[in-house]
Length: 347
Image (cartoon, rainbow, N blue to C red; front, top):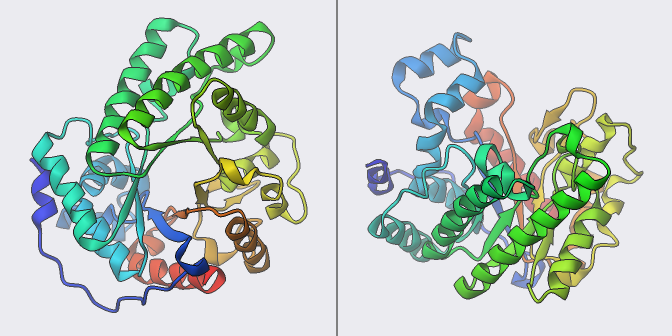
């Protein structure tokens, strides 16, 4: 099985030093998205990509699942960067739900022996996107997949599990439909939240993009968290600020300064946050944040860091996606430069 890749030896070099953030209370981590996919390509595919004969989407289609499953490599890169946390992305393709007990134990042991914490991103597309479906058969199918992935999170020792609100067709985003979608979502989160508590995993509700049409805006998301807490489920909130910036391409504005959206978030709702940027107009998701392509310039990030540290956030997860062949080829240096940039801001 692909789990054999967990046992592959690797030579480390040029490691960035670890830094103590906010007195040891705040950790920095990564969800590697497509940053390590090139490493899993065969020789001919690597050459094709370097010669612009293979696009990045095809690169992902060929090797993203292998990159997700090679947790040892993710840990090696994380340690080289001097970070403490990895978010394992269990969206499609999701290689994690089919792993057996021994394979999950190896993943857990890798984290424990290397001083790394995990979170797991529950599925959010295809079947996973039906977590809010008013059609009960669809919702239950999505819930079953979420539960299997949540069990994986617990089995590998993850502290947190992030869950998206799901997605709906545009003609179901108004009137009574919105009420039915909300009821379905709350029902799913109640079930997941109770399971998460038994498994000792913190369940964290993450905002959608504006393009999803539901639960992008902060008040809508906070209302879900409050309702779940009133029903006895300790749900938390992850404001993915890059997702929130997508509102600029759907007729809403981004405030000046953009990080001000963080100020009114209740501290007691926060554990893990996703940090990434977005380029309005170009609709570019998750560009390398140190390049300053989106609203988050250095001064904004410095204020962002001040706010989240003041609110007692436990971990900030960088979500960077490589956007060009040049970035893929220079991925190691780019990750080091971006990590140093963020550490300088948070440290």
